[in-house]
Image 1 (tube, rainbow, N blue to C red):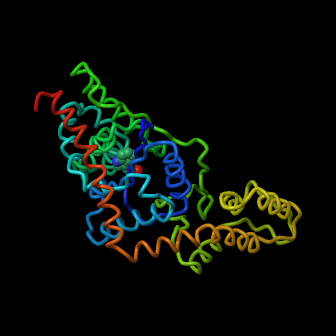
Image 2 (image 1 turned 60 degrees about the vertical axis):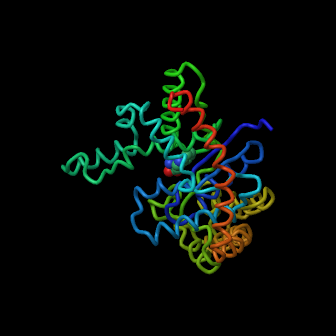
Length: 332
Ligand code: TRP
C-alpha cells in the first residue's frame, strides 16, 4: 500500500453551510478515493477564538457529524480529533526550535490583527494571544506528523502550507537527511464559488449562508430570501447572471439545467418560481444528508466512539514520526 497521503484539518467553528459542502467537504472526500486520507477536527486551533465551552463542545460534534453525514467513511479515512493526539503537541514544541519568529510575523492572519489594532490606535498586540501568533506552527505539526504528501485547503490557507514546507526543510537541512516529509498544498481551481443569498461569495462572515442541516421549512425560507432584481414575471431573464441559477447548477443535472435556462430565456417565469425550482433540487440532495446528520448527532456516544477509533489508528503513525525526529535530533 503506497498510496500518497492526503491530510486536512477542519476547524470546528460555527455551523456548516452549503459553501463548506461544495468548497471543502466534497473535494476532500473526492481526494480520499485516490489518496490515503487522514482528516481531523482541529479543536485546539478553534480554542484560540472560541472561549465559550458549550459553543466549542457543540461545534466539535456538529462539524464531525457534518463530515460523516456528507459522506466521510471512517473505515476508509482516518478521522480523529487533533486533541486526541498528544504527539501533535510534542512535535509542535520540537519544530518551534526550527521556526523563525520572523516567519510568524509574516502570517496573514496575525498581520491583519496587528493592522487592525494600528488602525484603531490600539497597542499592536491588543487581543492577540500566542495561539494566534503560533497558529501556523501547530498547523505545520498537524501536517508533518502524518508524513502528508498533499493538503487540500482553501486558498486562504496556502501560506500556512508554505510555512510548513519552510519548517520541514529547515529541519531536514539541519540534520542533512529527510527527517520530515515536505507537504504540498492542493487547492481546487474548479471548485465553484458558491454564491450567497446576497450575491456575494457565501461566507459565514457575510451572514449570507444557506445552512447545510436546516430543517426543510427553514431551508425553504432561506432560499426565498435570495435577493433578485425587479424584473417581472413576463420578462426574459439571463440565467448566467442570476445567483438563483448559479446555485441551481450545483444541485441539478445537465438536462435540468438546460431546461431551466430555456425557461429563464423564454420569459413567463417569475423569480418566485425560479426559487421554488431551486428549493426542490437543493432539498433533494440535502434531505438524505440532513437525515444522516440528525441520526449521528442524536447519538453522541456513537460519534465519540467513531472519533476515538480514528485516534487509535492515527496515534501509532504519529508516534513513528516523532520517534524518527527525536532520534535524528539526538534526544533518543
Ligand atoms: N487552519 C485551517 C483552517 O482554518 C484548519 C487546519 C488546522 C488545517 N490544521 C490543519 C488545515 C492542517 C489543513 C492541515 O481552515
